[in-house]
Image 1 (spheres, helix red, strand yellow):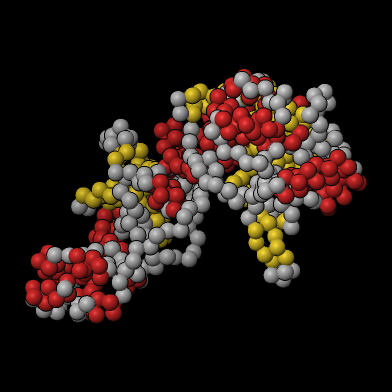
Image 2 (cartoon, rainbow, N blue to C red):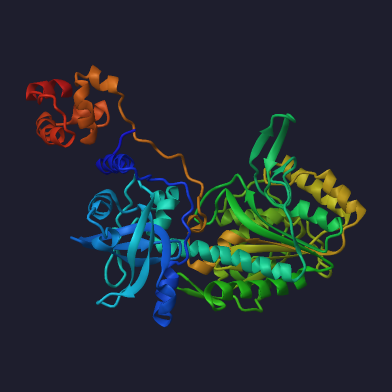
Length: 571
């Protein structure tokens, strides 16, 4: 492993601590009684409670001034200043703990525990006067240096998305605002869970590995169970198992869980994502619209303290009631096309006239869905229910009670994106079998997102499922809206990424074959000459000049090579 100068130095400090009898990774508990945010918020109003504090966290900066020092300290709640004084830490003659351990062997990024009392400095900054400290973890990699000026403006920030998503742990350490996103995400889930629980609905878990992919129109991931010699899918929805539980007698069930769809990736799609699905017996989609308005209003208030949320330059308002617009009326409103009065061939011809990519495998419902996505979605900004979809689009949904050819379904759109999908659930087992058979026909026509026949689910319906309404809400997209993030990668701790490209490094034998004595290989690597191609492209004069300084830095005792020797290496 090729190490930077800082990484080498930190490892040396680790060894020095151990030689001094200081364990850089202690095992025993370090009991904490105070947190940074609590001190900053409450100290001025209640100073007596902060005369003895014990804290643990990470060092984020130093200002050493001889026998005293200030440090910036970060724990799980925020940051506070620490003040160290040599004679407080080392009251006797032995000043090693301050002069050597603190000043020379600690680095930014190290985790320490401190005990002391809170006070206010002469400049008015609330600080912790440290009387004792203990190393809890020696950091071996330097953190990115993120500078903030007096106005809080960030300079030299850790902002590269590629690095931030791959190294989310670093992102969370140096970018406190990122932590706030995920705190709000958690608040969204806990608020929903509290609302559902207060209504007596049961939180459950259903299988991730399934023998049949169903409950949505999507391309699944496939895997294989060796012991059973069985092909399996990662679930694309939780719907069919949750409805089995309604059949079993539960009146309301819900599940927060990961779904997996083997489809494209972009700023609003990740191959694994989080939803909550809720099913309540004896309800319909009209009731579900009202429930959705209530729960999202509560969520918005819990996250931001208001029903309103700013996304980019748009102010969204999650206070109900939301407008309701049928999908066919929405298409007619924004395109002028009357899909109700047009057959499949006419709609397909119009799609092609618009330059849309459509195939003969797409039925009328799929074409309507494509038109809506291409021509209408972006116009719907404020929370709006798109209701009453064609039956071809919704194989698990009850037919509309008054509108022929339609089903009782709604999708909730906000800022041009779907964040919820709900039905009056189809519970007629004969009709459900016919709908599955229609899906098989689409599959034969080449639609790889069509559902499969699920005989066990049909069997459950034959035992009788009460009238039921169900909904699925996308947690990731809802979090994006409520935290003003346009990329789904910003609201998922560890989004899916392409494999990390590892830098190619020549082997020691490759350098030797090029004529480089083994003793000089570490020096060349430190000079960032990591491949033979880089060696051959380098200037012999520059290598020769840089080797002198690197020889001193690495304490290489070998006599310097001649310039002619270096020219041989370069070839």
